[in-house]
Image 1 (cartoon, helix red, strand yellow):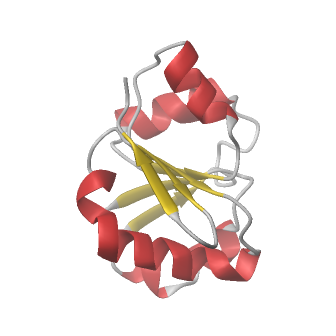
Image 2 (cartoon, rainbow, N blue to C red):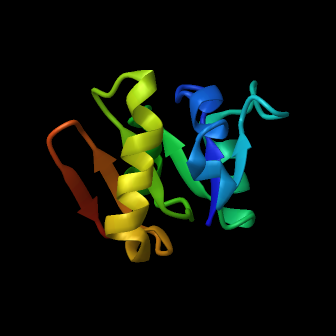
Length: 117
């Protein structure tokens, strides 16, 4: 699976975790640090990458502006050290949804998956 990590997620922890060993992981810090949310969304869509973020603005771009997008995973209420394990568990349990244009919110207690409009 291919990922684009927003600057608001623990890209260092995720890039150095077992998650990266099996997947293509690109951090927005590697050339897109100053990119707007719209630009990051376009890169993720064009390169068919799951966009991993802590920012709710991406959901707004998708639902209000109806911008084309890949799967968006929003990590909420998790510490930086919890990001890699949360993503690993998400891939194992819901990897099929991550290949679609779903919006997925991961919290310490639950995973919410919403199909895109």
